[in-house]
Length: 249
Length: 234
Ligand code: HEM
Ligand code: FES
Image 1: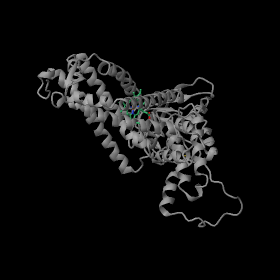
Image 2: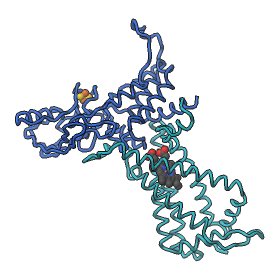
Image 3: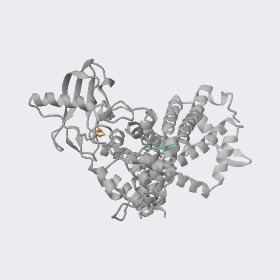
Image 4: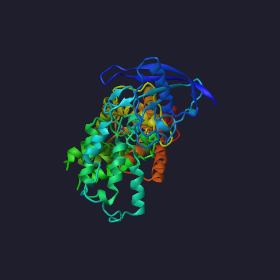
């Protein structure tokens, strides 16, 4: 098994108010089979043995479904590979002697909590503003009570795959949350269950997105390029159309 | 429900307005280029065209005011997007690069605010030179008309004018390289194929418009004005 030496330049920041800086680390014996996060685990083991503070980074599932692990690797959200979350990235994408710069997503709306971990509750507040469908509680309704056309259900599902990782914000030159908000809106607004609250939802989520301090969309489409589940910027165009409809009727 | 002003100034509303005003400005410059090309027509074609526009009287003023409003809204929102972007990311990345693929990051898209501000400054100088400049009068069908054509030909004898105009027109092309596609996307263009096609059409429009506009000053400069083969002077 081939191993390599990897040089890391990692953003370290004690807390939200502290001044952060980059620290250099060198790891020898990195296996090409390790995932990117396992490589960071190795770094942290090394730091703990040296009695130093380990690097804080977010993860949960480590299989690309929870969206926790968003970090910016050599200037790209989730690293070099398309349709891949940082946790699904493998060290075989790097070569012996490479230097990797790791930064947290940078946006005023995503303040750093510690090191690579940012507070993404701005996304939660956008969802709270309207990213839901109101239903009566009680026994689960009959699954096919409301017919959904195959095409509609496919479209809604494509948008529903958003894992809320925030890579779109991290990569956008304007730090816009338009892809996230657009995907959530397009998901619910395309289903029959989403129709009663469609207008209110659209207006409220757009308003919240702006309140949180995310930037404007300039149609750079970088968000689509970094999205680990490949959500298309068509979501943003749908949001604009829905916004016009909601404002004029 | 938001009122019209709130809707128009919201983040999504602003983007739609940039697109609408952008398309309007593109339509205007296509029209404008048509007028400019009259310089290659018969000796009095350009001045005749100018006289025809002036004959619209109050309507011409209405169009001018409308154009000014559209231009100011477009520039204002464009510049405010730039300021907001700086506020939205106070701490810059140490390393930043595009992931490619569907990304539309390019020299053109990244320089929208810069090319836009240059265009803004240019338009002020441009109006001062050609709309407010000193013009002789000529007779067209027995009526007095401004000799715009001679003013244009004289102005572009100067290398400073000819080359700076040509350069700004390259920047206009750069602005439109992303702008035309972006405007349609801002107005709700979705489909993958339609979007790819619009990107190509937008690119071609940007190149054609830029070449159309910059050809005139350079041709006048290098061709020696009235000496040039394609230009007839009275
Ligand atoms: C002849 C003049 C101009 C034309 C034909 C033009 C055309 C366009 C078009 C078609 C767009 C795309 C709109 C969209 O993405 O929704 C655009 C965007 C833009 N324009 Fe212009 N424009 C002109 C002048 C200006 C001026 C004077 C400024 C600024 C001072 C400006 C700043 C911008 C900016 C910053 C954007 C990008 C907006 C964004 O980030 O989304 N433009 N322009
Ligand atoms: S850790 Fe869950 S998506 Fe990466």
